[in-house]
Image (tube, rainbow, N blue to C red; front, top):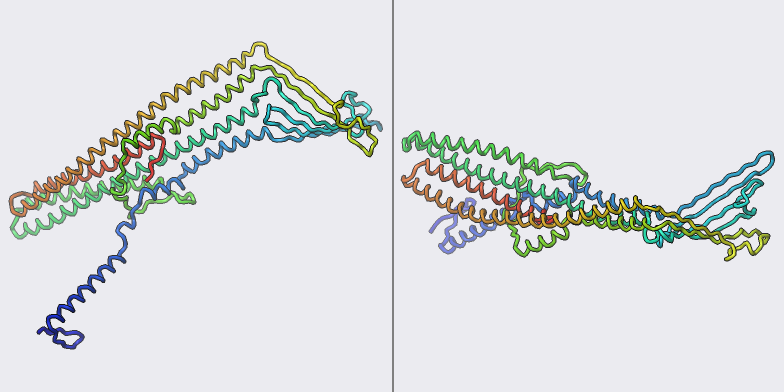
Length: 493
């Protein structure tokens, strides 16, 4: 029998009771540890994910905000062009009285409504011209004269005129502005992604350097104790000290590079109020496994095919070509003679029945006119049309060349990606093999069959290989982002 003292009381328990109490204590301990693990803060609470950065950059970056103004500016130019079709009210008044005689009393008013169809203008007017010395051609009765008519270009301006030409080109340039907006956003995002993976590499490099310093520090302390006890020669402690100091220097350099990369990445971080933000020192990049995306051959073919059609550079050049097409159509219209027909139906204002009925609107009361002009040689119009044709040819050739260059750049970026991918796979195996060598060398050292120099050499080699692998991960992700950028798209995480 065993005696357990609990709160100053003595109990004699059997073996079954002892086992039951021990099991209960064990279960309570497990429950306590689980509760502690659940309430323990996440080790990754400071992890700064790429998708989080993407949301911040695309919403708040000043250059992206500026790119958004391009579309608004293009829409503003469309609105400005629509102003050429705004109705216009015109009015004028003049009166002269001298020596008790009313020389003239003029009142002219007109509402002009431009019409999209055939470039015509609708005119509604009212004139009142009275007085002793009025021109008989324009003189009216005291009731004035109203008119409703049209001005129609039968030659030049029938199919397209300057107003419709300006508006059509403005609408086309909205597409140009959208393409330029996408190009600027893609450029900003590519720079942000590359800076992120530079920061990732710097963080991984610092991690491995810290591990190397910790290993060297523990080994130096252990060897120093062994030297003091006389188990190891003093030269071993000197070598361990040199290795520690060398790794400490590398750690300081890695720390500087991490701080610099963090500052560079912070250039892309802004809040919604336009205030620049700093990436916290405690922030860490996301784990490699979360961004382990691969570009398949099928996706490559899709990117290449779409790049030739939807790349911002191609879309901008096509917008310019479409704009020149409208301008060419307008310049061809200028080859026609100017032949404008103007006509109005007239009526005298009724005034309590004192104006005769034949003064009302009727077919017999009208005003009509025709304007005609035509340059004999058309040298100005022919010269402008030739210039437009040359510009169209230049852009057409440019689209062909740019399309091929874009497709080639996507394929070369993909080749770089595949090369980094192969190197990363090989480097991963090399790191695993080097870890086996280091472990084996440590076992031999414990058995007295190795020396400190070999251990330090193999450990330093392992650290270098781990850093190289982290660099390949960074380069691989940068190459993937480059593929999408050269295809005119954003890589989405």
